[in-house]
Structure formats: structure tokens, C-alpha cells
Length: 545
Image (cartoon, rainbow, N blue to C red; front, side, top):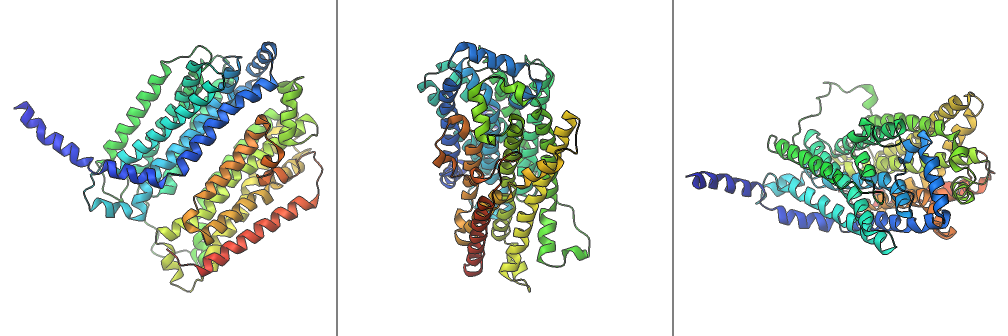
């Protein structure tokens, strides 16, 4: 009797998963470029970083001194975490465990939300559900895709480090730490996809959780050097670092990733069963009966769609600038007498005084991250097009160029607002640390705004992809990723100058403190203008949809 009673439940469960395999193959085909790029870029970067540390710190005494100096500096612990092992592998884990965990989290949230909420938002999921596709098949396929991507990332990291001479156990631990963090946030993204009506909101919500996890980890590691703070253990990013690869691995930490992933995935499945396709638990509120005057025209609509995102980025940059500025005064203590480390910082920020070098490095990082905002603002055009929301606007007395320009104005000028906020935060943070807020205010805000031409190059190239090659618009994220990787890791890997020059940020003067000439600004602005104009020409000539 028990078996007979259980049979209908088994059949019901099978029906809810019907079509999972087909959707998984479809997802892997759609992500056949994105996933390998993420996996290879991050995995091979970790493997190559060990060689750079060998060149920089070629003796055990130098590595031990680096570990002591980093652990004695609360600001550096907040930025990178404590150093648990002074071997080459231990330094790689110190530098890359948290950074790799964040990138794996971003990769996972993009995968899961793309194949769940984004499919529902565009209406494609409703068409698929009309066939033999179970209720839980889409979320199952999305999570399996994320699982395969994170498993591949784990293997590439472990194999790359092991073949470069690092201990196998530590290499596997670091790979599992990064992949485990990615899977945890895949579950978080699956929950966000059930809660929100738009893919953009779901990505923002999951990204905010990643940010909170990083802040909790940073606060915990700043408070203690041994990882004993409760704040550290609340954060999955803290779990990744405190698995302690190459430093007496704590394998039991992997149970935290497994339990967290299981809980978030089960919660997402439970929420999926309690809503209809296209619906959410946090539906958008109905607007007023009459539109305000600010919505009169294409620009008003674009501003309404993008203003919340712009405000969030500006506030985030102000906080990040304050943190970076606050730790700049300790740059000399951080580097000490190590000439190789000084050379890396100077390559990232210029050859001026060390504090200015550190501030220039932070201003450059703000610029590279601002490119993420600018790219997303331009790609809102593609989201409006594929979501069939652009067609009603263009059916009115609004031309294509006017519609596209309304979003591009916000993308270009909004980047200036975001960078200005970061510069103000940098100036206040540094000024507060040295007791002179007004003394460097103008130069630091100017250093942040000097990143605009390079950001606008990437903005223009994204516009070109949207206008001329709309099916390849996601490649814009690859351009941003390459620029970030070159700026953040390229100097440590001692890449040749021609490789560094692939990033537009490499051509900017290093401010504050560097020599300023007009030529690089003019060339970058010209490239940005030409690519934007070419993209708008493509928008005017191609078919929409």
C-alpha cells in the first residue's frame, strides 16, 4: 500500500522536472562562449599569479615578512583578508580566494538569472511551458548549468596551480573554495529570480547580497587577524578565504558551502511551486493613473528606467572611495622596503610618490568598475528591444536615434556622476585620515573624472555592438572583463606592455601626481565618438527586434 501511495508522488515529481535535460543542453549552447571565457580567464590567472609571487618574493624570509606586514595592517586585512600561509601557494590564496569567490558569484548569478527570470521576462518561458516542460525544469537546468560551470572552474584552478608546482591538496582546496562560493550564490540568484519581476532587479538584488557578504568579511577580518570574528563566518566569501588553502586546509568548511547551497536551492524550489510563470513575490507596484510631466518624451522614460540604478551606483562608489581613501595613508607601511612590490604599484599607478601612486591606483580601479555601470546602461537598450517594450515607443512620434540617444545620454553622463561620487568619497576618506579634507579634494575628484575617456571608449564599443551586431551585445561584458583583469592582475603578472595597452585605461595619465598631456584624452574621446556614431548608424539602418 505504501508503495502504491508513493507512486503518484513519484510520477508528479518526474513531471515537474520533465524537459530538464533539453533545457540544460539549450543553456549550455547559449553560454558556450561566456562560461569558457569566465572559467579560463579566472583559472589561468590564478595559475600565473604564483610565478609572479616567486619573482617578487624569492626567499622564505621575504614571504614571511610580507605575511607579517599584511596581518599587522587592519586596512589590508579588510581589503584582501589575512595571510594564513607564507608559501607561494599561500600568497596566491591570500590574494585570490576572496577575489575569485566574488567573480565566481557574479558568473553564477548571471547564468542562473539569464535562464530563469530573464526567460520569463521576455516571454520565452511561457512558450516553452506550453510544451512538455515541467514547472521546475527551468530552475533545475539553470542550477545544473551553474554547477557545471563552477565544477569546470574548480578543476581549471586546481589543475593549473598543481601543474605549476603548487601542492595538490592546497590547489584543490582553493578551487573548491571558489567553486563552492559560486554555487552558494547560484542558489541566492535562484531565490532572487522568484522574488522579482525583472531580470535587472534580480541581478541587482543578488549583487547586493554579494556586496554585503564582502563587507561582512572585510569587517570581520579587519577586527581580527586570525579569522575568529563572527562577521567573517557569516559571509560565504569569508568561508572561501578561511578554508585556508595551502595553510593546513580546513576541509570541514566545505560542509558550509554544501549546506548553504542546499538551503538556498530548496528555498528557490519551494518558491517556484507557489507562483505562476511570469509572476513574482515582489510584484511591481501599479503607477499613478496619470503620468507626471517628467515622463513626457523618450528621455523622461529613459531617466525613469535608469535613475534608481544610477543612484545605487553613485552611493556605492562614494562608500568605496571613502574606504580606499582611508587606507591610502598606510600605503608606505604596506609596501615597506620591498622594491618589487613598489614597482607593481608604480606600474599600476605611475612613478610618482608612493601615496599618490596608491591613490592613482584606486582612482583607476574606480574607473574600471564604472565601466560595468556604463555597459549595463547601454545594454538596457537591448533589453527594451528584446522585451518588446521599445516597439510601442517607436510606434509613436519618437525616432530610433532619439530613443537610443535618450539612454546613451544617461550612460555617458551617468558615468561622470558615478565617478564624481567616487572621487568625493576618495577625497573625504583620505582627507579625514590625514586631517586635511580640502587640501587634496580637487586633485582626487579630478583623478576620478580623468577615467571618463577610457570608460567612454568601452561605452562606445558597447553601442557599436548593439547597433551593428545586436546578437553579440553580451560580448561587451567580455571587453569590460578583459579591462578589469588587465588593470587588477596584469601588473602583478608582469604582462608585456602591448598586452596592457589593450585596455583603454593603460593610456591615461596616472593621477594624482602624474604628468598630464592632452593627446591620450583626445584619442580616447575620438575612438569613443566614432564607435558611438557607428553604433547609432547601425540602429537607424537595421531591423529591430
